[in-house]
Image: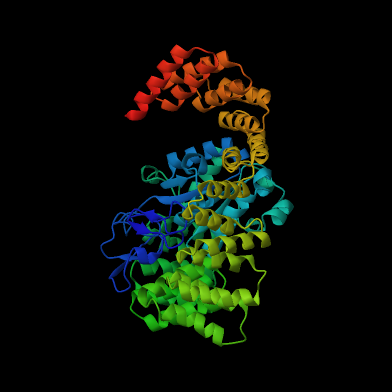
Length: 599
């Protein structure tokens, strides 16, 4: 089994992401620093020479190397546009050479943010479906911002807005600023398109026509712009159709020889084809035109590593870190590369030099702690974080990192205190709440852990009825009955058809001695699911407390008809029969209970 370095959960040896906390498992779980490597052509991560799949993006070998493959598309949308998206996704799947991910088919319950982050990282094309609802959606903004942040350190990625319903460009600039400057697929004046037409336009723009349809593909229109050509090149790159991608980048450069992004993309493609001198020449052109391009510096460093030019690669990475020292995606990518080469020298040397170069401040110690943490040097990471928090005691992020490293050191009580302090400073701190749930789980405080996990889900999705219902269960288990009732009511506000929420409301009302109301709630649950055993038991509890013994007995008989081997119910039935003074039957029920308990 492989242990997660963040929460210590045990995972299968081939696991890429931790199912408990959702983070990508540390690269050191998969390979030793001196192992021979090969590079994935999809995400460009280094892997063991014998790897059968990429540890980072999950694509199998050798299908994803040099041979054409399906592009990987992530569709971001607001839930109110689901009907439009169904036809849009269906058309993409039928006519595009692509694997399409969207939440209705692919998102599983659990760590929603971790799952979305994993899939956004694994899919190089992100289509953002825009509508008035999407423009104001926090989830769409989160996904779009994440996709664009990833594209900053990997310029082969494509973010493509598609308009499903007319949007006001002024509102887009105000609410979803990151996408306001992107070329959109839309009708006149930002009007919406029918889903099939929108999908066909996206397929054409990205050159994702399926192999069976390429023979009848209409030649490219003469109106193709340099941006069109570059985006088509990235679509072809995503399918490992590298010669065609080079041709598309060449068309873009023929239109504008100063198009730095096209030069950088051409360098990436030449690098994958192992045409290193030409790749380095393309990167040089790109950096002359755009010397502050983070992605180009990173990609140049990757190409230099693959040529064994480690000193020059380190220089390129130092340039990248100087441009964006706080960019988490760039830091992770650079850290992975340097850790594989010289785990304890190169990566840490950059941080040590940063602290020595000027007066100490919290961010420098925080960066040093993060680097130590990534190298699994937890005591040193904790010391750096403690220096940072002395300089900035009101920084919730530092307290969260202290909590995380204390979990690694199995100092769970202290970790819990750190997370609680972080949440006092920032009650909406997702990472702190997630860490608190892990700490409580490791302390065997499972009801509190469940409560923290449900609150985390609610923080991310306030209208998640299942999360409110789970919160109600956890609060009731902790003896907080009034709060449990409130949580159940919230669940029913968002989903009145959720039988489990009616059931939990009934139990909370029983605990508050409001038995008539409890009985009504359990009846609502049973109207939705007549064989819901938990609701039947809840109804029996309410009837018992109302001294309606005949009804209680009839309910227990119904439960036993569904599960005749439940010793607890036989015991409760015997108790009811005693109350009815039917002692002979009660004795028979007790005998049946004893038989079942002895097995």
